[in-house]
Image (cartoon, rainbow, N blue to C red; front, side, top):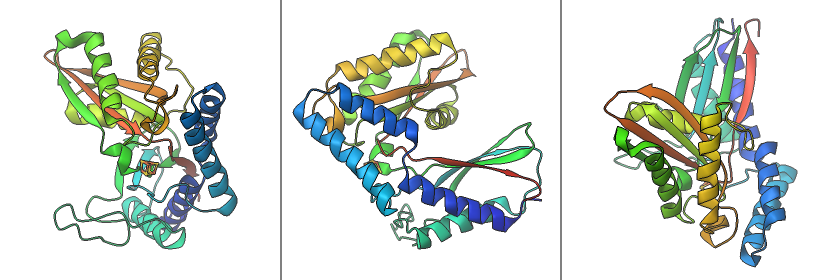
Length: 281
Ligand code: SF4
């Protein structure tokens, strides 16, 4: 049995790691963007981001003051876990006090802050059942400068690939500098409205720079990425070659009458950290 205490400790440790250390694939993509850049302002912006990443790691402090909304993805295999939800929430509360994380969680109507980064339905927990013999926990602190620019299209079948591409590119470019570009763009295609949005967010868990194993989707990802970057919107929306570091697509089958498309935008502070727990822990 995986104890509640182990879950709490793991979640607390993962949030600390995530908010302080940007994953190497993301840092590598930002460095690559810097080396390819020629625009003076874009170079300054990318250098500031890279210095920020380095300093946060050196000083063991969060890389951005917005430590996000706590989102946790769980992949649950054939294991026994004691009080999974309570353990995760306790881990978030502990990380909020110990790292510390900025208390971002409020009542949606009164705007009263809970002070703990927990509340009704928060941390937001997504559980997927798997065939493995372990429990995989991924924390995903999501900044809202980028989240506020997400969008859903309840498209029609006739919109086709061109309609999808058009919607994704338009959504990213209309957001301008608000999501703190260079961004990573998660796209969910198919399902119903909520599944399309969930797939868009889950797509952001994939490594930046890896291409989709499905050739059709890989080519659509590259096509959308090129169109976004050809716009010249650039880092922080102030001009330059790299507006997006990558585009990630996930799909599901859908109803014959529809074509839902979800877009989830992730800022350069693309924080995520994963741990795998086994039964005897
Ligand atoms: S969008 Fe991202 S980089 Fe910008 S303030 Fe929010 S967390 Fe920080």
